[in-house]
Length: 637
Image (cartoon, rainbow, N blue to C red):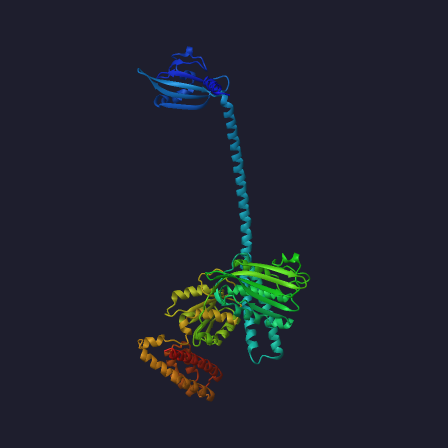
């Protein structure tokens, strides 16, 4: 096809146009008669031919141009026909005209029809999609309802375990604690000791089962809170070694720990959860091992500049092992391993499931390899923070010093066994202890006089522990701040956030949390701050007082030792009374409180000389600490 062909085609298309000239009243003045012959219509109004134009007359007369696309003239013609109408105002020298151009679009109507069909199909499709979307919404609503019901069931289960755990943990805590106290007594021997050991072992087993059930329940609902603390990996392993010592001796197994040279000494992470992970993995390894032992190895996998590291932990045993098909199911609750089962070996089967979830909660991973008859190896990686340098000083030599002599503590717990156990631990650390068996009694007691430490159970019949603390804080009239610790069977959401210890707890756990909440000045065993204040920083005066203390200290130590040996209450009273203000001057607040206690307990008709002897030994240690400190000060002058 050439240019002429295109031109002819274009001109042929122009035959579809009719031009009609109208006056300002829309009367026909002239027409080309291309589509219709209007020779006999001259001086006729176009509205008579196309009545629909009447509704547009005002616009046609006022607007420069008016375009009416796709006008269906089926009402005026024998068959359907689509036309475009275009009205344009024109002017010559004499008057104004209106040009009406009518285009026959019949040759394009098939395309218009197709377009309309496509539009209708699109509308139908949109309607279908809308119905489909509504169906999806209904399904989602139904799914949400089902999920809500499932969540309610989970919440109900969690609430049930939370409630029952309080009732179970308190007696378990008491049984364990009192059994331990009895076993530590010198007169515990023979059959009685065997019976108590059996009670203690059974209680520990019950605690393991209870902990597993509670942990898996809390993990299911995401109710585990991670608490970062500073800890020493070697110390943690020592405690684990002691925990498994009895069962290892019974089964004649070995347990070895190896820490790589590059592993940071001081780590920051959730020590409680890491200990729980190891406890469950080691329990599992020992249960399924009859000969040989268990080997634990820790290596530094990677280390970053921002005090972050990833540690690789390996627990390898020489036990029964597993088949490849069983490894995939090892972390499923209650899963059996070959001919052995957790139930037959004394457990719940939940331990490894808890381990996996706890590791993943801390952004770690765990893997297991095993050979039947040779043993199993668990390897897990855990990201932790670390401390580069921790300087040691004189305090490190005196970690075993009891720093709480003379401090007053209040214990609130509705369980008599728990009160007795906690009181025993605190008294051994030098606390003067009062107890309350209900929330209301605790509130009344703690408001009557100042206490350095307040340990309260969270769940009590008449008033919960957090409510007691809330009311105490509002009514507290004492200038000094009371250290507050919550004791609970399960950690959840509380109204007030204070350090919390989970029942049942051991002596070391309670000691650690007390150590963290009691202010440093109350635990101070040496210092120059008080001397600075009373001497107005007069260096010469201060030095004279220090020299006097260093010179007199050996004599004071000898005098206390002699009066205790002679059971000379009057002499001990004088020696202690003389030394008490010196202890305060030297910044030994612990010694000052201890001497105050001894001063009033060495006189009277009934004197507990055994207790005074124990207290005097602590006093001598504290005097020696202060003496060592000030001797170091003299050397460094």
